[in-house]
Length: 534
Ligand code: NA7
View 1 (cartoon, rainbow, N blue to C red):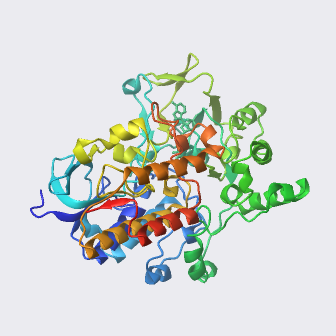
View 2: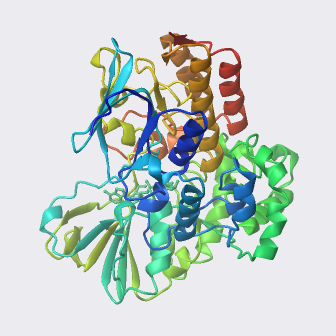
View 3: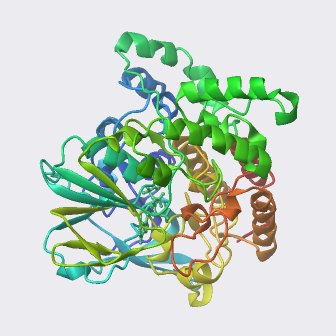
C-alpha cells in the first residue's frame, strides 16, 4: 500500500511514547499512520515478556497523566508492577482512546529518506510498502534493539536459545530443565531470581557483578491505592521537576555536613525504602566524588555479602570494578538468595570469556556446560540502535547510521542536524535515554514534538531542523555535565561500551529532568531559536 496524498506524519512505535504521540497528533487533527513491529501495543512491555520482568519505577508515577478519567479508572495492584500488568495497562489505554486503529502492526520500517524538493519523508516497510509524510516521529524506544553476542557455533546448538527481549509470547517450559543464563544486568537479575525454583539446574554466566538493591514491593487494593490517587495532583507536577522524574529527589545535605553515623542512618533508611531512591535520591555527590562513591558502594557491598552464603559465590557477586550508581542500578527480589540454592551455579566469565556454543551447550575455559535452554539476558544496542538499523537518510542522502557510528549527536535528544522534520523521541542525549522515570520523560518529549508541529502549522511553516551551532551547543553542554560524573568511567550500555565499535559518550543527558524540561520549554517559548524553520 502507498498513500496517494502525503500524510502529515508517520509515527513509529506503540509503546508508552508512541501511543501518546498518536493520541496527541489525532487530537490536533493530523492525518498520520503509525507502525509497530510487534503484533500489538505495549512496546518494551510487549517484547520483554520474559519470566520476572517488572517495572523498577513506582507504579503511581509510571503512568500517563493526560486524562483524569484514565487516572480515575486504573488501579495499580503493586508498587512495582509486573510486565503483564504494565502491558495490560497500555492495552487498556489503547482501548479506551481507540488508538489501535491508527496502527499497522507486525510492520517494521526498513528505510526512511528525506526529499529536499518536496520536503517530505518517504518511509518504507520491510515488506516494501511506501508512505510519504511531512513529519517522521520515531518513538521506537531506547532499549529495543537486542544485543546478541556473536558467540561462535550459535547455529550448532540443538537446544532452545532465547534473548529476553524476544521471549516467545507463549513462554518456554523451563520446569526441571538445565538452563544457562548469560548476563546479569537488570534483566538477568529478574530472570534468575524468578526461575531459580522452577528449573532443574541453572548455571549463571556473570561477567560484571551488579549492585542490586533489595526491592520493597507492596500490594495495593482499590482502597489502599487510594492514598496515591489522592496525591495525583501534586505528583503530576512534581515528577517534572525532580532529578530523575520520580516522586522523590535528592534530599540530603552535602556529605560533609553529616557525621559517619548520620550517613549510615540515612543510607539504611534509603535501603529500607527498597527503590531507586538510594541511587537518584540519596547523596548526589556519590555520582561525582570517587571517595564518597566508594563509601556508598561499600555500604551496598556489605548488604550483598550478607545475603550470599557460599564464599566463592559471594566473592564473584561482589562488585568492585566500578562504583555504585555508575551503571543502571537494578532492584532485586531474591536474586542473591537464588545463589544459596543447590541447583544454581555461578561461573565468572570476566577472565575466561564464553568461548563458543557446541551442539549441547556452552564452552568456558575449555569446559563444556550442557543445557536444554540458554537464556541471553545480554542487553541492547541502547539509545541509537532502533533508529540506526532503520537506514534513515536525511538531507543530501546523509545516513544517520553512519553519523552515529562516528559520533553520537543530537539536539536535546529530539532532533538531529541534517535530518529535517525527524523527531527522535527517546533518542540519545536526553534524560529519557536512561536517567529518567520513563513515563515522565516520554510524555514531556512527545508534548514538545506535538507542540512544535502545531507551532509550525500555526505559523504556516513546514520544515524544522536544528542548526549545526545549536547542536554543537547541546552536545558540548551534554558532555560537560556528563564528564563531571563518574558514569563516563564505567563500561556499560550507558556509555555505549557494550557494543563493539560504538562511539563512547554518555547516552543519557544527566543534567536533571527538571533542568532539561526548562531548556526544552525555553526553545519552544523562543519560537525555536537555534532551529532553521522554513
Ligand atoms: P545490560 O544491563 O546491558 O546487561 C547485559 C548483561 O549481559 C551484562 O551483565 C553483560 O555483561 C552481559 N553480557 C553481554 N555480553 C556478554 C558476553 N559476551 N558474555 C558474557 N556476558 C555478556 O542489559 P539488561 O537487559 O540487563 O538491562 C538493560 C536495561 O533494561 C536496564 O538497565 C533497565 O533500564 C531496563 P557486562 O556488564 O557487559 O560485562
